[in-house]
Image (cartoon, rainbow, N blue to C red; front, side):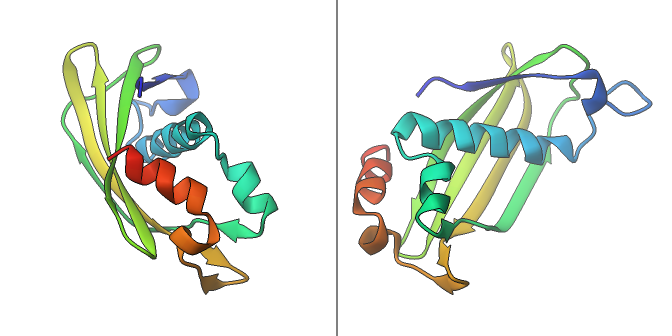
Length: 132
């Protein structure tokens, strides 16, 4: 899939003029939502069917700073998928400069209880598995 692109906004930056580290988590979420939409199974659909997908783990490794108006290209890939969880890897670049690598892991819950993605949403599971 094509990378997701986020242009750094003025409000993304701190007083030093660089993108605040916490915003990379938000950029990851934007990229993940876009990725799900491109699969044809957006979060709106999943949530309308009563399933949520909270973050259970996240890592970020910052390599270089970004600043106002930089366009960060975020490549998202499925790192691992199991019956209960999915892990994504993110590679963020400005041009050819690597600015951040990251991962996030998510589970799937319905009414606060874990659901098996393959059973509850077999089409989504198959689409994700096909992307590996």
